[in-house]
Each structure stands twice: as structure tokens, then as C-alpha cells.
Image 1 (cartoon, helix red, strand yellow):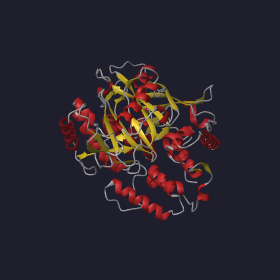
Image 2: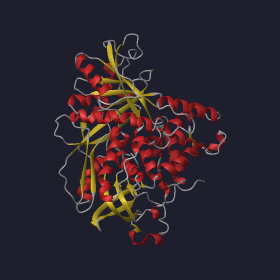
Image 3: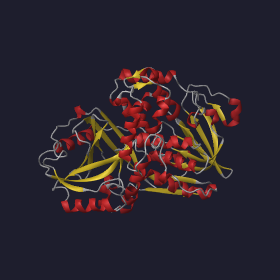
Length: 541
């Protein structure tokens, strides 16, 4: 067995002191923990549920500048996001790749001249080296036109990127842990108060059931609560509030502070239906209500359709696509595709709450997707993250640690701009060309030649999910028997052990919907077998 990695440290090894404690295990919290740990700071990240359990696994899964934001004159945000696309694509070619988007022209929505100007700006606001330029096409006889209603005669095509959003968060957290951070899932920050020039932070580990172990070494800062949870305190020199939809709640309930800022919680829902087209391009459709909706190839056999923009006034932890949203997405798809799409075709739906800065825009679609970093130095350093989007998470994290660095006495510069995420360095198997899509294809072929006994679908899935780290899953195995039992179709014990040991997976939901998307294909009884295996192989906490 390999040495226990930092991520799997038992709770008794949680440090009593750290430079930085990050509240929230979404993409921004994981990104900040990663950047800070890479600059030599001691970091603890605390997430009350699983990594990416909420907003960060419920996106449209795009690395994009936001073409529609140009209509709202958010040129700075679009430029910043466009510049980040290729940085991210190079950092993790296994979980991100270029994607061509087809926008069928509907003269009743926006004039062709406006769209042409918009995609020209989109091409030129930031430098491109990986992504091809936009173009106009005639749909008759083109693969993109085949599945569409005949009323569409031409379209505009441009480039952006696709990302497995939940895996992006896990890999950022994995990188943070590899660089020395302590990552605590299912650990709630119940409060904090200024103490000795920093923060005295109270944590409650809700992962339950397992004995604490080594209580004598923990000192007075740890103990077992009446409900079986582990409670402890950590002294942090600085605190980051990256709680996303709960950022305001954490300030008021956790810190007893009032904020001058406002958040608007906007629910975005998506549906997944059987595949509607055979090519590998995506669609972006205009709608009469000025919304745009994407239809994207998803997990080989499906099409992902979304998103909605609806004000959400309930608990952000309890969110689901309602019947009206599902009907809206089905109706729009049915207006554009030859194939009819009805709610009965939906094999899965998901919904997330985006915490957007309240800029008093009346239309939820017009609310800014930009972010704001608010640093308070008195009585102790506190950085609150307001807003943000997946595409700019790396830049946000870099700016956040730049702000905190003087408070923590470090002069280490940002480093993530040219760094690979775990699994993204393919140079051990191939000679990289700098073209992420081509490099990943070469990597997959090289692995297939080295592991001819692995079924092709399994090898491709592992290559996509884990990149160069799939070697850690295969280990010394030389046959399917060496992978252990097949707990569910296509899911072997070696993968489950890896997900528990190195990616904080603790439940079947963690495995089937966030670490993988096997949930789309597994029956309830098969998911139950995964849960049983995980419970029988729980790591000590």
C-alpha cells in the first residue's frame, strides 16, 4: 500500500494552527487553497459536505468567455475569461477540451450583423493559440444542420471549451493536498472569533461513526460531541469565506458580521436526454425571452440542455429543477430540433444556485457574473469571495492570495498560470505538442498500447477522468482479475480504493455523480452495492 497521502490524514492530525483557513470546498475555495499551498503557506480547507457538492457541480460545464455578456457591455469580464480558456485547457487536457458551438441564426431574435460583430469581438478580445476562429456556415448539407428544423438556413460557429466541473474542483483540492494543505470534507465551520492576531475557528466533523483515535495527542482543542461528531478548534492567521451561496449566512451566523454587499441567488437547471445528434459540436440557441440555451454532447450517449435563470429564495442546499423549468427546456429544444423532446425523455436533471453579486439588474440573465474580493484587515484578515464563475476560478484564486500575501508575510509570486492540474501532465507517456486535444488523443493511444488487456471503454473512461494518474489506479495489475471485484458494471475495486484514498469519496453519490458520471447508467441496486462497499471500507477518521 502507498503511504497515506495528505488528503487521507485522520482527523486527529488536523493542525491546530495554520496560516490560512478556507471555508468552502467549491471551485473558488479549492482554487484558493491550491494557490496558497503552492506558495508555501499552511492551509486548511473545510467543506461542510462533499467537494463540489452544490454549485460547482451544477454548471453548464463550459470554459467560456460568455458570448452573451457582450450584450451587457461586460467587456472586462469577457476578456478576462477568454484569456483564461487556453490556460485552463493546457492545464488539464483530460477533463477539459475545445468545443465548437453552432448558433443557428433566427432573424426574429437578433440581426445577423449584431451576431457577426459579437463573434468577431469574441475572437479578438484575447489571444488565441489553441482555439480556432469563428465562421459563418450554410446549414444545408452540413452535419450541424441535419438535426435542426428546416427553418434554420445558416449559422455562426465559434469556439469555447468543455470541462468536467466537479472533477476540476476535486483536482484543485488534490493539488492543494499534494502541496501540503489539509482538506477536510463533511466538516462544518460552526463559528470563528478574533484571537491572538488571527482567528479561532471552530470545526465540527460530521463524517460520523468512526472512533476519534489518539485523543490524548489532540489536547484540549478536540473532543467528541454528544451526537458522535468530532469538534475541534484551529487557530488561523487569516480566514477566507468562499462559501458561495452561503457567504452572507456565514458572515452573519458564523462571524456575527453584517455585510454591505448583496447576493442574488439564481437557480440554473439542466436536463439530460438521449442523444439528439451524432456529431461532436454543441448548439447555442436564442430564445424569445432573450435567454440563450445550450445543447451539448454529453457522456457519449446523451445531450445536456440548459440552463435556466430563476430567482431562488429558499435554502440553496435544497434545489432541484421544477416542472416549469423542465418544460421550458424541452419546449425550446423541440422548437429547434427535428426530434420532439418531452419531459418523459429526461433521464436526469440537476440544478444549482449561482451566488451572483446584486447589481440591481431586473433580469436575472443580466446580473453580472464577475467577482469581487473583499478584504477586511481588522480585527484579523478576512477575505470574502463574492460571485465568480468556473472559467475565472484560477485567476480569482491568484488575486485572492495576492491580496492576503502581505498580511501573511509571504512574497512568493503566483504560480498556477503555467502549472498542470493532477493528471494533466502527459509528458511521461508522450511528447507533448502544446495542442491539448491532440496530446490527449496521443496519450490515450499510448496507454491502450501499454494496457491491451483493459477493455477500450474502461481505458477511455479512466484516461478522461484521471489522465496520467490512471497508473495509480492500475498499479501492478496485469489483467482484469488484478483490478479486484467489479462492484458495479465497469467499476472495479481498484478505482473505488483510489477515489476513497485520494479523492475524498465517501458515498455512492460522491462516486456516481461527482467523481464519475456512472450514475447515468447504473440501476438503484448497483448504486446500493457501491454504498455497501464504501461503508465496509470506510477510512479511519
